[in-house]
Amino acid sequence: MKTARALIAALATTVAFAIPAAAQEKFRIGYLRVMDDAQAILAHEAGLYKDHGLDVELIEFKSGTDLIKAIVGGQLQSGVLGFTNAIAWASRGADLKVVSGAQNGYHAMIVRNDSGIKEIADLKGKTIASQAEGSTADTVLKGVVFKQAGLKADDVNVMGVSPQVAVQSLAGKRVDGAFLFEPQASIAKAIAPVSQIYEIGEVWPFPCMVVITSGEVLKTRKADLWKTLDAQKDAIDMLQNKPAEAAKHIAAQFISEPTLKTLNQGEVPRETIITEAIKTQVFSPAVTEKERARMQEIAEIMQAQGALKTRDGKPFQVEQILDLSWQQERKL
Amino acid sequence: MANESRIAGLQKKSAMALAVVFILFMWQVAAWSLPAFLMPDVHTVFVRLWEELQSENFRAALGGSLFRLGVGYGSALLLGIGFGLVGAVLYFFREVLKSAIIILQSIPSIAWVPIFLIMMGFGNMPIIVVVAIAAFFPAALSVMNATESVQKVHVAAARVMGASRWDLLKRVYLPAVMPELITGAQLAFGNAWRALISAEMLIGFGKGLGRSLSYAGETADMEGVMTSILAIAILAPLIDQVLLENLRHRVLRYQYV
Image (tube, rainbow over all chains, first blue to last red; front, side, top):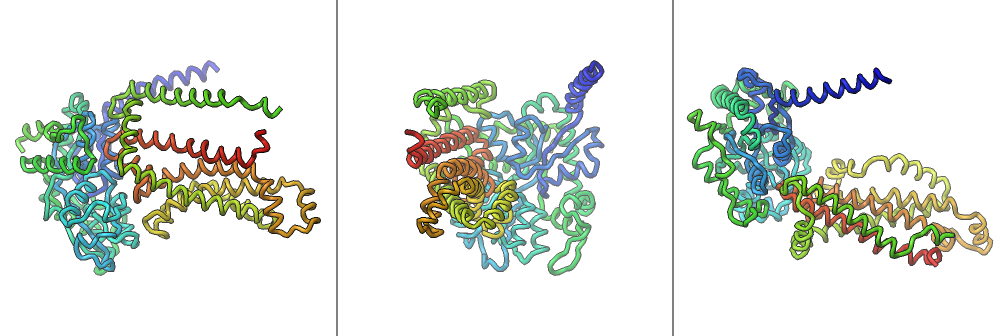
């Protein structure tokens, strides 16, 4: 009995000391398995975080609305996700900061060829797959895409699912269309009889993905955070300048088999599909003046949709959650 | 003797009130120890619920949920009673059905959602079927178990008096199984309600309490989350106590004399 007790006590002590120690070392970054988050994934796969002397653990989430909860709860140090999530929580009092840009919104509306849909207005009464309600994709889908086509949010049945499930639903005829990120849009076009009818980046460019952290991390682990941003900036350089090399590192994250069975071209190596998908994207570590204005515009859309409520009812000021000292320091 | 094991009406009500006070107190303790954007105060949520009740959107969500519950739970009860009673006169059928239920009821009805979405499409139907499955098993099982304990002498007496199979079901089995049927219906209601909210949260179609809850969670509106939880927590016992408990008293008058 005595030995057992001593053993338990020793074990408890080890665990008590080991957990905070491990938490101190590791830097946990949340991501979504989409091209918009390629910088976070590539920095990990290509060993760029290690080059900057960091031990980073990447944790995957289904949607930004889940990821942000892990940042608010303190389980993650940062994440690459839609900035609307930060606004929603910050407006309620959570201490969150947007510290860098990542990618400009790429969301394509892909529809089944047999659905007869030619433009966004034809979606009335149809069912489509998109991201979870309240996410950035959902906000712009309803507040910009539908609105510009004269549709109301309730005119279309929107199924909130993960990007992977959205592609499966589209290929399996469960939905008439899907509002997709890359590379899911490219994959869907390669494997199923579908067409792209719309891409928001061409019509209404906006800073979709940003790097979000908590005020606490900014206070206690600022040096580490900046190192992750440096590593992600290196990743962005590779994505923009050497897409084929970047694809080699990250292709397996999106397509598990070495080749993808396409509808018209037979088996195509996954790297080819991913390289093409990377080329459609605009990555940028800096948040520009113009993008800040767009962010404010989206915040106002969210307020109009009822997804964002400030305590005093006044428009939410996006500036209050921006901490762009890293990009100023790096002169971006 | 029977009356001694029951507590008086007033005591029962004060016990219920004490339970409510305890739950609200624990909630408030959590609200004191967490920031307001994570756990709102009890009174702010009650105020919000009152405001929501005036809003068209919330009433539509409430109506949508109750409609799905009504159709799903109603059809589960009808089928459960129907199958259970048929099992009373067809013994082999009863054994087969009972074995099937024992296997199937261990599967959470929500697990069927991915298949139902493909089979029935994205709409009300998969939610209603999930609710019906959740409620069917306890209803059918309670009726079947009750029919087994119907006294043989009653059945024999009815037969001697020339009762057909239909007469037997209607005049012997149905009255005999009533007490257990109502307990089964109450059990089924709890299952149906839980399945409804989970299915609405998962499927996210139309308007419903589950969907409102999940949307509030996605948009950082914890006050909205707690408001939906409060509405769910108030509605379920209300339906159980007012509707089902009243039905029990009416149908089983003789037990309460």
